[in-house]
Image (cartoon, rainbow, N blue to C red; front, side, top):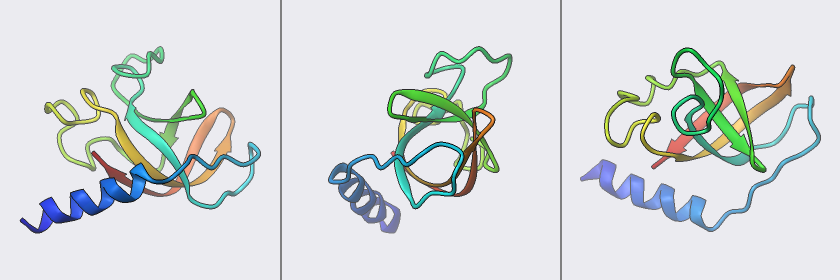
Amino acid sequence: MKMYFLSIICCLFFSHSKAQVGPQDSTQAVQHAEAACGKCLFGMKDNDCMLAVRINGKAYHVEGADSNGFGDAHKNDGFCNATWKAAINGRLEQNRFKVSSLKCCR
């Protein structure tokens, strides 16, 4: 029951926010993005399933977080089958998002 209310609050928070994207290759404040499997849902050319975030329509692999850290990625609501809303903090470096914090909400 506690998780249910937390999920609702999280989704309400993210549904009223707008994406904030600063200049590339710099440390940024918290941004809102989509998170999912780069191979399965974002069409990235990978051999394996890998966590990615999509910012302003462009997908980036995530370094510093794992898709299975949020439960089984291959479940119906996992990263390979569903896109999650994410609050991320980090920087873009060499076309990868190096994450310092990542919070996701279905």
